[in-house]
Length: 119
Ligand code: SF4
Image (cartoon, rainbow, N blue to C red; front, side, top):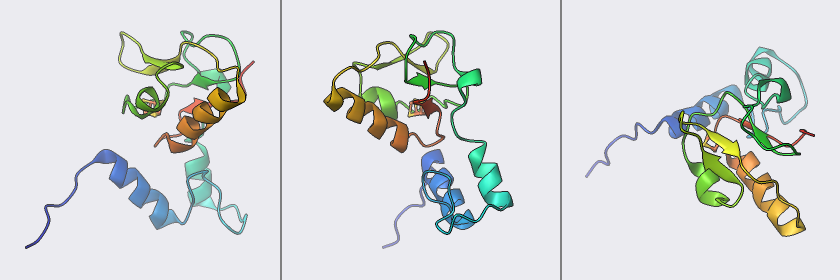
């Protein structure tokens, strides 16, 4: 019996990355820059585009968030949902364990809307 096709948008993003040969970080394995990696680089979180609602600090969410809920599921102590339907950082991690958890959320965000170069 055939399985039903998946129409999850996150699957499509992963397939798109695989098609262009980029890993989750948006970098080509051989370090060569090309148009596909430039397109993917635009997905990386940008400090200048972060939501103002983020608390000050290292971690933030920018305006690329698609409200998939993953970071809030992974690290609810640090990520919350705004009334306008996107995630933001409501508390900065301080312990090594909590920072690692937020790094994992950053790495798993399907659109790379989480940054860790904030202030
Ligand atoms: S994982 Fe990324 S896209 Fe999903 S809710 Fe969090 S910041 Fe938004």
